[in-house]
Image 1 (cartoon, rainbow, N blue to C red):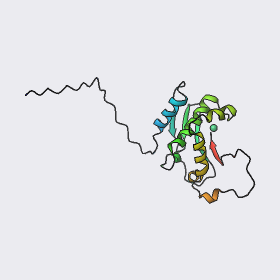
Image 2 (image 1 turned 90 degrees about the horizontal axis):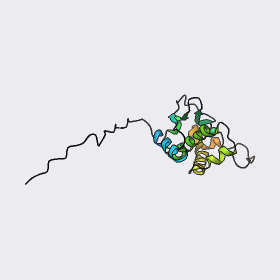
Image 3 (image 1 turned 135 degrees about the vertical axis):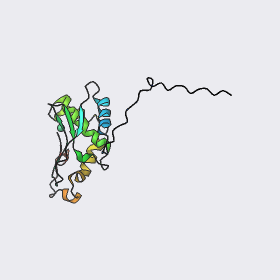
Image 4 (image 1 turned 90 degrees about the vertical axis):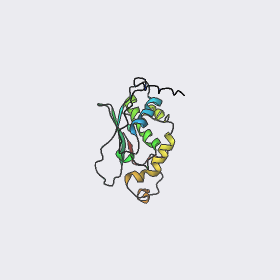
Length: 164
Ligand SMILES: [Zn+2]
């Protein structure tokens, strides 16, 4: 019986795709950022999004979860967010926020806030950050309880969270 000779592998039809470089990272920042860019900012060129440098492990009272550098047009995400305890939608909410600074400027004005709410997991990520901030700050939950019973103004600000 005849056995058909194997079809020669056409390398031009199937270009070799380089294997991804293994990263010592929990969240694949590039794909999280790519998703945000495609969904909300497709008409703008994609920005470079990187983890920031881990400086110290001191206990902190506040944390800057992300930043946008308008000179380099680069977004930095705090390296503490590169953790299995941080959901991807929280990391994406920071990326979305920083993209808005690229598009709308530095001010957290009404226009900024209304655009911010368009992120599909906006409420969940705000809520998650509010409830779990103590994890990010390296503190016990009880240490972050308000010391006084003075009611906070409504809407309640996200305590000590800084998104720049
Ligand atoms: Zn901001």
